[in-house]
Length: 244
Image (cartoon, rainbow, N blue to C red; front, side, top):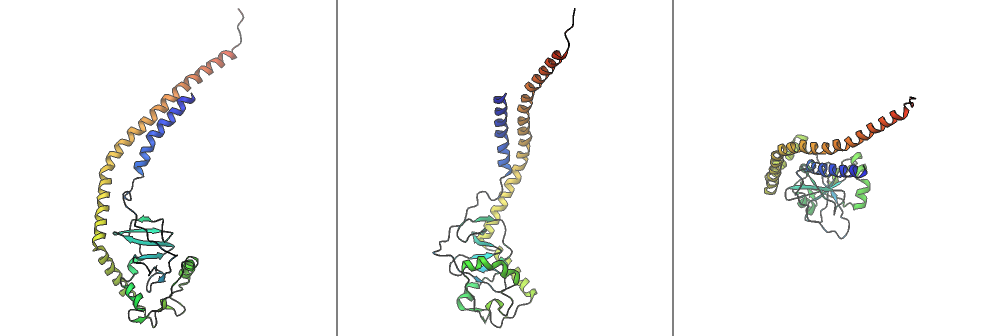
């Protein structure tokens, strides 16, 4: 009985595991990870004006952002995020919503210490200070209040309508990048392949389920026979001996 039970379990697992593996396939399969960025020490960041608390590492050639508790970077038209600035990257299947708030010329403004014609006295924030305070700064609107205005002197906030138009323009420009278009085409092709394979997968599932049920039925039959034999034996034991 034990051998039959174990063999039934093994057979069921052998049939079920491929189903789980197929169901777990998603469009992220085959997408590579970005090359590592080597840091001699934890990087300092600056907060970018006119953004929802977007921090950037200015000392590397890669656009490396910190926002909402995550590190973010783009590579070959794809986006990745991690809780660490130098490892643990995972694919993010859309553009993070903070990105179109970022001025594409921020590096020039950083180098010239000015933001759209106004002196920009930015503050370099150490990594430990960022990790300890970023959430409180966000909740308190630290970089907008107390006369700081992101460190831009005589700063005049642009109207929200103008900012929406700017974000829309940046989004259109982003979509025109060759690496972004290539990535979108690759994702569309993967989705078409998944849709074409879906009917075949659905046809295979009932066959696998049927093969799983058959060993269970075969396993139940010997037990039923044993139980019937036991009940007949108990019945015969309970009948009194008849005297002739």
